Image 1: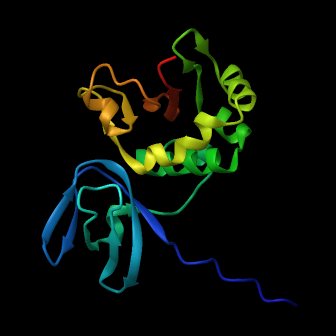
Image 2 (image 1 turned 135 degrees about the vertical axis):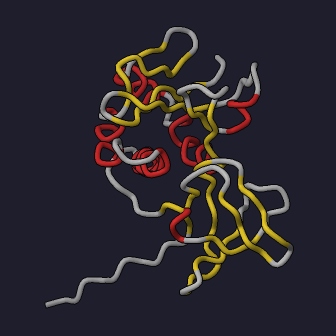
Length: 190
């Protein structure tokens, strides 16, 4: 019988929480946001040597494997876990354009347009009609990190949106609901 191929080693990971520290030769660098994408340069028993392409100066340093997430789950299975696990699951479902998986974690009042676009099915229809533009950009939007919005219940990407009123570009938001994490919007100013 053919031997199954071993899974390819991970080439990227995302920070599990805000404040993850990269320990580099130039000193420690604190990454302020949850779910910042890091490229793995080397993995060994001491942890991971990573680079943050989305960070100022693109720092390189070591990070503890317990401080990052890389295992992709189905979105519904990741709902009760932490936000980083959920965000990775939703990111990968969006990348695969797995609309059924995405629909299962979108809120009934999911917002996709500031001109009255609400609901999971209308959002999916809009993404299909517009050749997936916003959904295609969603993974890279998340890779820049997720930040809490004004100390409230909403967590959003990119961090620029969470810190600036009047942000007009594409942004996504999440909150914890009764069943776990929920995806509540992917919208830009119309």
